[in-house]
Image (tube, rainbow, N blue to C red; front, top):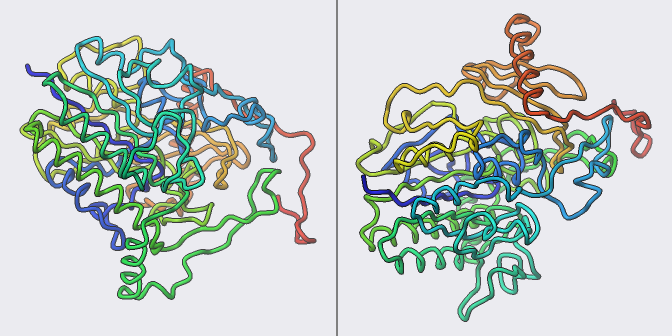
Length: 478
């Protein structure tokens, strides 16, 4: 069997509804839609965490973030990863601020079997001693400890990313990353390769070229949504250091700059697909497209809306963890197919190994299950999926853990209790049916707690100094 090339495109903060093929009427993504049209689109795919770093580590290790101890986005602030910054009703929980080099990454496993391994874009998995070259990647362009485009210009020059020096003609970071990928593909000598294409987009700052913004401002006028107030101000943030701020929820996709940022991303995905065509590699390449968590919809100007899903990045509701997933493999995946199989981030490791005809690394990807059968149109059931996020999120989410089993999803919020949803009937998680189904609730909670014990998952303790607080003499919040 000829080993297929792998192109794994991971987008930062792209929501489940942020693509045309997923149902967006405002955003335009014809190149990304091509992957769905020529391959398989998953409706029930999940990130293993509602924030970025844990999902990224899960994808590359085949383990749940809880098993790794890496349960929050990695901050350089010791108060953050020591658990002393985020305080509310509960005390903060510490986490590991890196992906350990003791882990045999997916890149290392593929490299062992003759693959060239290239990382382009965001990394955000630790300081320099944990950068991509320490995890099996031959090439690293743009990967460092930073979690967002850095520098005075952010996406525009001047950017300040130590692993990507500006070149003559550079302007926009997403374009530069796309060009780097094309150069590697076109210059390859026929050796199978793994391109780990982790765009910084569509993370904040929400920036696009002026002509794109103008295009979507006009589109909003034509659609009649330019006069709709897209932001609803909601409850206060639950953690102490943000308690005087209110959560802002976007109720409609209408941000012209965010739409432009998605189009820039789409154009560069198109570059990669075109390069594969020109090089004659499309038939021999598996292209995977997904996101690291849900769309940003409740903070930092709330650039997108995840409706019909509830909430977004940083929350344990579906808007924070359900992601787009598209996979193309000509001749192996029937074009234009849709799968409702439940998959999650740690499943990519064994799936890619099996698709490449390589042996499993069973001691490494302990929590992942190959979904190759689903890609082949066969019956597939990976069993329950779990989440553990014992932190206060910048976006307003509170510490929680969760399990999805079949159509049922149970969330245990450590501050305020249990919620149960039938996702087949209630994808928006509007009707908590836990009181109506005590047996299902009890069995799923027991299964979740057993999993947490296996993971040695940390749970937040009550904050003895917490008191209901007043904001400008408003009623106490509890």
